[in-house]
Amino acid sequence: MTAHDSSTSQDLELTSFDGLRVGVFDSGLGGLSMVEALRHQLPGAGMDYVADSGHAPYGERDDRYILGRCHQITQRLLDRGADLIVVACNTATAVAIRDLRQTWPGVPFIGVEPGIKPAITVSPQGRIGVLATPMTLSSQKFRDLIDAHAQGVHLVLQPCPGLAAEIEKGALDTPALRTLVDRFCAPMTVDQVDTVVLGCTHYPLVRPLFEDALPASVQILDTSGAVARHARRLAQVIHAHGVNARDTSDSLRLWTTGDPLHLQEVARRWLSQPSLTAQPL
Ligand code: DGL
Image 1 (cartoon, rainbow, N blue to C red):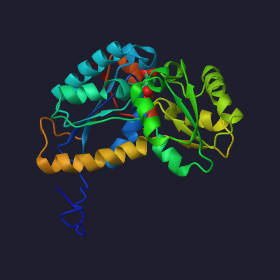
Image 2: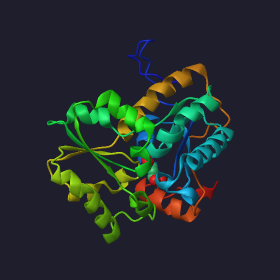
Image 3: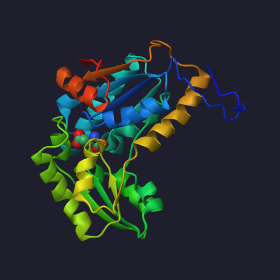
Image 4: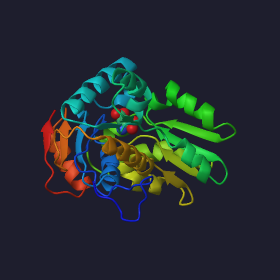
């Protein structure tokens, strides 16, 4: 373990997470928006990313189906030595994280949820739009989040059916994508929101389209940075207690239930790493 010289034993800051393996999954390509932030916060850590593209989109599936997928993928990530699992999908988090924690009480899980809390702290007028999958917005977990933190806030909740599936095709800017983004952003402009939350990990991958569709004054938030910082804090604790050390390489390994060449091509482009390869899960 290496540490900054100036650290005290209490706030010991790791500079390398060597030996740690992080398992990350999403219904498909969307979690790649999280991988970048995690790699930045966890230098030296190995990572296995599973894109469940053969079963995407989750946002239009039922709970039972999503739960089953999350259990299977978690087991595969644990088999590959994961010390920590990041559920890089708002939909899967809303539906399954409680169940995953109950099933594997010894495994640390980190989930993602639409960034309502950060939006409230930065919204000048308290007028906030949330774009997410139909499943996320209709989940009990999301309702609980609103009840706990968004009293008195003007919220515009916009389900975006079809958008994650369109992003899943891998192109960043197509007429079909622009049509969908424009359609889902229109109510935000009508309702004069000042802050928009991207509540699905697929959406940051096409952030420039949201910037084009919304007035320039609207702030656009996603939670990848905050989630990665949380992962770093948790990883410090895990590292201090000892890691599985089944695989100590710091490589990023990509797995998919869809087409490996598609994931590989998109990941190389989005993560700017020309040597990445993807394998079937
Ligand atoms: N990326 C996922 C999320 O954050 C969902 C996309 C899907 O519908 O599969 O909600």
